[in-house]
Every structure is written in structure tokens, then in C-alpha cells.
Length: 266
Image 1 (tube, rainbow, N blue to C red):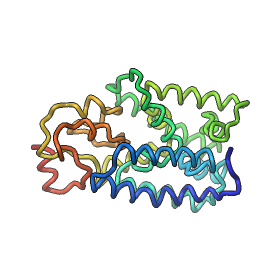
Image 2 (cartoon, one colour; image 1 turned 180 degrees about the horizontal axis):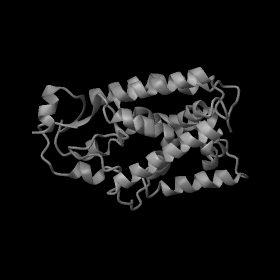
Image 3 (cartoon, rainbow, N blue to C red; image 1 turned 180 degrees about the vertical axis):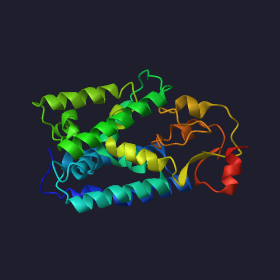
């Protein structure tokens, strides 16, 4: 299904333009569920049509020194990795939220109204992902091993039904019915890097003095990142917290400053 005549850089341009656009929508309070869903659909379609923007694959390309990947020159790959980390430091994990085809497919599947698993053990999840990230780096840097190859991501988006790897990714997608973004939260090396930037992002969803501590946001957060003391490094800006909040402006996508810090801890 992938159309090779369309340059894959098209997907990267889309992501680079969309990150500040989505950040602006969040800042203005107009990032509705319908708008988010539209971005998810467009992003997923780009994954199947041009296999881009596949940032995890491009990071792998950089790690193994120009091995299997979408065909982008290595210096450009490194530049894009740095660029998206800077964007995440400024605006949060918007790329992961709506602009990565891998994440978009999982997000869409998770919207199915089935009983979901608890996310109370998020520290264990983080330990697993960082341990895997170390293995990913060692395998790539020392042995030029492309570990993402075994997840069947390329086979899935290329609709290579005869590949055993295709089945592996389908299983991950099926797990998304119950567990929020299993690949993103456990195995995505690019997401691991962006989570570090997101922990200190300038703009993120913050509580204000209007918060009544009802706990509804914490109940619906699929990554257990809605607490007042959570750094939001695993916040995918899914909007579930803001949609259930009963008080206007109690949760805002805003920059941290002295005034907002005082509100956060009121």
C-alpha cells in the first residue's frame, strides 16, 4: 500500500509543521477530541501511504550508522532527532501524541470502550523501557543490530501479511485494546528520549488554583500522570483529563512561571 513515488520527507515536514500548530490549539483551548481524532487519522494514513514520519526507525538508523531505515541521510536523521527533542522540551510530547503513525494506530485502537488495565505500576513500566533502551543502544552501536526489525512495524504498515513480524505487531495492536500504547511505553527508543525532554517541557497540562482536587483527571489518565506532582514525562496529551474536569480552567496547557507554580501548589 506504500506509495514509493511520494517522498518520505513529506511526513517529516507534516510533523514539523503540525507540532507548533497543535501546541497553539492546546494553548488556545481549542484542541478538541474531534480535532485530535482528525490528526490521528491523517497520521495513521501517512504511515500506510508513505511509511512516514517514522521517527523510531530514523533513530535506529542513526544508532546503527545508516543501516535499515526510511532512506533519510544520516546527518538529517540526527538533526531531526535533536529538533523533535527541542520541540518536546518546549511543547510536550505532541509528536508522540498525534503525529507518529505507530502511536496513532495504538491511540485509535485504545478508544474502543473495553475494560482497561490499571496503570498504577508506572515505575515498573519506566524501568522496563529504560532497560530496553540500553539494550537497543548496545545492540545498535556495538553490533549494528536493528532491534525494531523484530517488532514488525514496517511489515504492518506495508501490509506484508505473509511475514511473521507482521503478526507480532498485530499482537501489540491488539494489546492496545486493554493497555495504553504498549509499544510506545515499553519499547519505543524515540519515545524514551522524548520522555526525558517532556519531563522539563515549558508547556504542559498544569493544575491551577481552580482545581477542586476531585481526582477525576487521575482516574481517567491512562499513564497515571495526572497527579499534581507528576512530571508529565509520560503524558501523551490525549486530553482525557481536560475532558472530564468539572471546573473550567482548572487544567490548562500553560507555561510554568512563578505565578503558575504558585497555582499548582495551592
